[in-house]
Image (tube, rainbow, N blue to C red; front, top):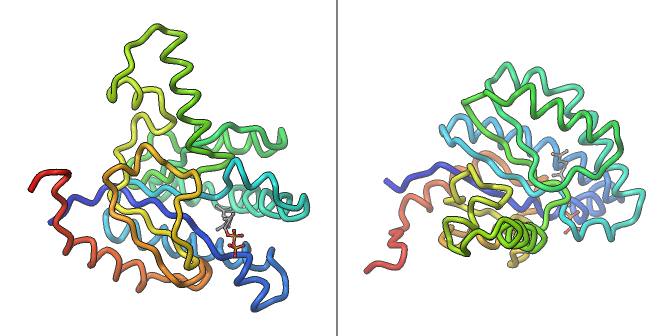
Length: 224
Ligand code: FPP
């Protein structure tokens, strides 16, 4: 059996799904949130300890203001309504990315992290305003400032994911095969699955198929 601690997901395809089914990209984001809920349940069922979701990249600020506002409102409503329940389910929420949103959302994110800090069943890392290059530059700057030797061990210590094991699996939905500035350091030995379905159409069964395929892979980490 391959060890399975951490699944990371690039949830791509909301916009296309929304345009196809409801003539609005934002409707796709709303539907995408339902998939997030389903996948959290499946992750718990499969006893996976870490789930990292790419919800908003440093590059996503280039989107129309209306779409950005919609996404952050969606997140705000989701947390307001669901954080107590996530807490009851023993789920820990961690934000990776600098919190530079509205003061209301920043506060809500901080409170949600604080409330769920000691939870143990599943850690959800929500990548928000996250970009791997920014993360790496910031880590190198800290190493330089503290006059710390550049080594794999020390670089990891200064990453936003410092206490999180590297992902075993990366899933990208939406029929696009690229990493989009996501966890470039952490994905060095991750098994990558590109999924044709758009994120709102992705379901528990698709997730299960990927977990089965993953178990058939011989992970040799550079050995023979
Ligand atoms: C990428 O699809 C998706 C995003 C940039 C946002 C992800 C957001 C969600 C899944 C819903 C909200 C989640 C939370 C946690 C509140 P895209 O819009 O780039 O799709 P496209 O490639 O079809 O344009």
